Image (cartoon, rainbow, N blue to C red; front, side, top):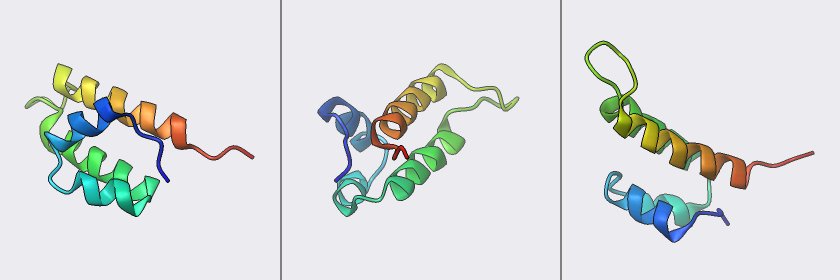
Length: 72
């Protein structure tokens, strides 16, 4: 089971169509890939510089990653 806050889920639901299915599937890699894909399409300007929108998505990505990472 993925550890994701309701705020993060709502944020992602407004941007990624199948977020509920991704969260239910429980694959951290698939969820992070979907966020990354969205960021690549929406989070950079014409000069490939990250935008405020990209930074916000990056914060959500990082929070989910660190909360769910497996430690040895």
